[in-house]
Length: 176
Ligand code: FES
Image 1 (cartoon, helix red, strand yellow):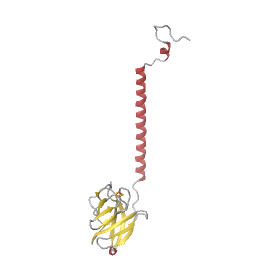
Image 2: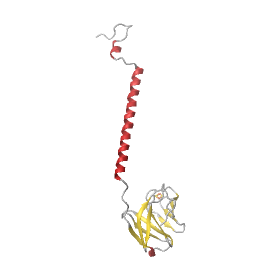
Image 3: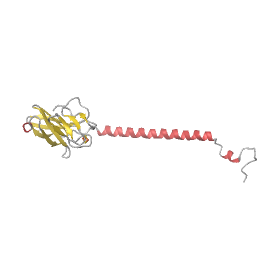
C-alpha cells in the first residue's frame, strides 16, 4: 500500500483525516461547551423539581401543645427540665422573674452537650467548651456555638405552663 504519492506532495493520510490540529482543538472546545450547557440544564431541571416538590409538600404541621410545669413549682431563678416535642428532646425552663418564664432546647448548638442555668451570671452555660448563651433570648454570648439555642414557646394557661412550639434562628428578644 502506498502511503505517499511522492515525497513532495501531501501525504495520503492527510486526505483521509483532513482535520488540522487547530481545528481539532476547536471541536474539543465545542464539545466542552456542549457538556457545560447540558450539565447546567440538568442542574436547572433538578432545582426546579426540588422547588416544586417542597412547594407541594407545604409547611410542616404545627407541634402539639404539651403542659410542662406549673408556675408555682418553680421559684424565681430556678429551673425545670422537661422534654419537648419528643422524649428525645431535652429542654430547660427558667423562671427569670415572677411573671416571666423562658425555655430552650438543652442541646448546645455546638456539639450538643447539655446546657445548664448559671443563676449567678444569669446565663445558660455549656460545660464542654465554655459556650455561653443569654437567658433572655438564647443568643450566643461567648464560645464556639454557631447559633442561638432553639427557643421553646411557652404559654401560661392559668397555673399551667404549656409548650406550644419551637423557634429557631436569630431573635430580637425572648418572652414567655
Ligand atoms: S458543645 Fe457546647 S460549646 Fe461545645
